[in-house]
Image 1 (spheres, one colour):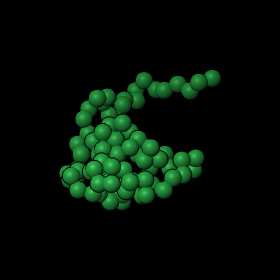
Image 2 (cartoon, helix red, strand yellow):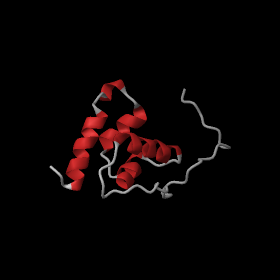
Image 3 (cartoon, one colour):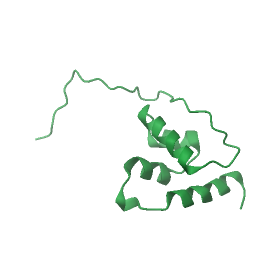
Image 4 (cartoon, one colour):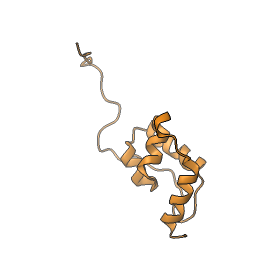
Amino acid sequence: MTPRRSSSVEASVELGTPVEQKSSDLSKPRKWADVAKEVQALREKGATVPEICEQLQVSYVLVNQLILQSYKMAIDSAAVFERQEQIRLGVE
């Protein structure tokens, strides 16, 4: 049998509601540790992975791995982020 959800439980986040982003300067290289904190804060506020990716200009793979913390997605997040920052800023 499938578990039933109680009808008295309400969603805490409305769909399509924009989640505010912390002020981070996207024109300068960022540090993965700082971006990771922003990702977690946005997720706690109810933002979806695609919304976070768009707001912070970070790839889906990095955001998804951070949120899921899956052993199946073991990549060097810091190194991948650094490379993507170089590409995003046009520095190669």
